Length: 215
Image 1 (cartoon, rainbow, N blue to C red):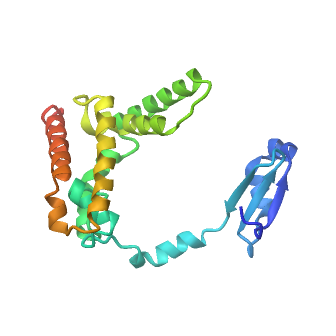
Image 2 (image 1 turned 30 degrees about the horizontal axis):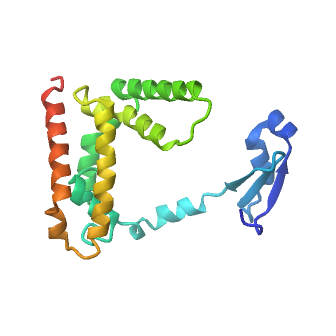
């Protein structure tokens, strides 16, 4: 934490009686929207109590475009690996068209997605309840995220372990692309054997899911 930021002490008594929002409201000053809260146990929390950074992004969205031609860009590499997906769609009409196609699937009220998220939350809760010490959160977070989206998007034709393994391979191939992009052009990256193998595997999984999807 920066020592130059205003620091406000919050007692356990005040925290229990009035909650964290009351402490933030009392500490906030319009001319000093960034500050820290110091708690009785010695921990600190940095508060960004202003939305100026968000407003800047909204007012200058043209500064944050996706660069699809420069392979130093993660967007360009992601498109090489995963194709014309929503995340790696070009800004403008392409993104809007893909957004319209995917919106029904990612609607939080969609029954399948809602059920999968509830099941994943219960699974995560059970994991924490059954383990007194968790040394590494990454495997839990990865499986939780996989369980949230697997059934709604790919159905029951692929199991959790297979999906997790695919996610790990995705990471390996992506970082392989980052390394190769230092001295390979875009055309060569598309022909990379690791990329070709990953895309073929992904296509088979998607085709299988579509084949067994309900009408």
